[in-house]
Image (cartoon, helix red, strand yellow):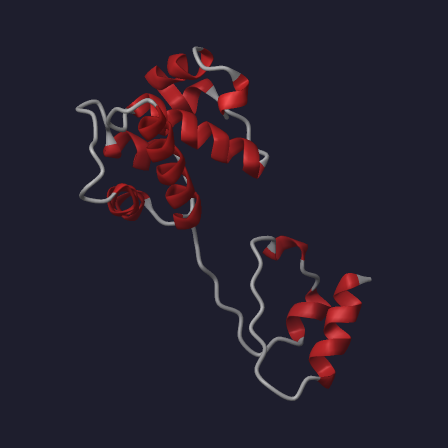
Length: 141
């Protein structure tokens, strides 16, 4: 019903409309046929995810020596917005404890992002850092 309403509004709109979704699979073929251009933004690959982690953590944020950007990039297939959100959450966790950002903060922040996305927190993805998750209360995520 919402798609039908949106299509009706688009067909009567005399201008440029830009639509965005992260649920492309939920769009039916009739809807996508009415779009002139569809641009796909795939999940960044591992080297780009590493660069995103590095950029989102910034140059001025103190990092613990255990921060492993290669592990973060290889283990967690996240889009740029989710990486940014996890980096910000980790920074807040570290600031609250008055210390540098650590892998425990980052793993906890990724776990929080996974929960927001409805994804399971799997031991195989978190590897040796899964232990830091069990030591935190669930309310921290």
